[in-house]
Length: 142
Figure 1 (cartoon, one colour):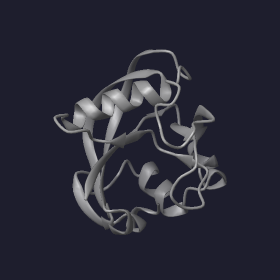
Figure 2 (figure 1 turned 135 degrees about the vertical axis):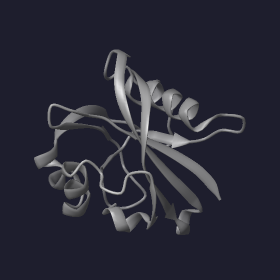
Figure 3 (figure 1 turned 180 degrees about the vertical axis):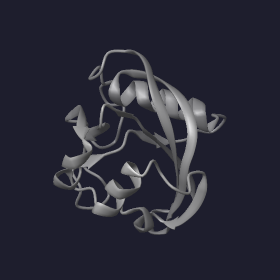
Figure 4 (figure 1 turned 135 degrees about the horizontal axis):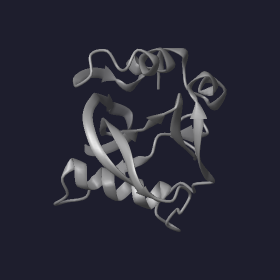
């Protein structure tokens, strides 16, 4: 089992997403990736955000912890605030799945990008139960 961190940045009713295939049918994903040996969760997330989006972030509150048992992953998601750099400066080859783009997507448009109504409802409600174990990733609508 390995650990994966992701960051959720919401600004002006828009969420930062990667135009990138996921392990399922979704073609958009949250920025983040695998925690390397010796890295803290926050350090790994800051590194992944720069590599995948070009943005420097401050890691905030823990939003949720989920399991992706079929892939052997513990999925930990934090709120992040953008502090600098330029969106879209993606590090070439930084991810095993190619990143086609980085965009701020309206919360209303998340379902058209493959995110469930459950996920949108949680985002709009400012992540009720933040900081808790949510069980399988499907419980948050992903």
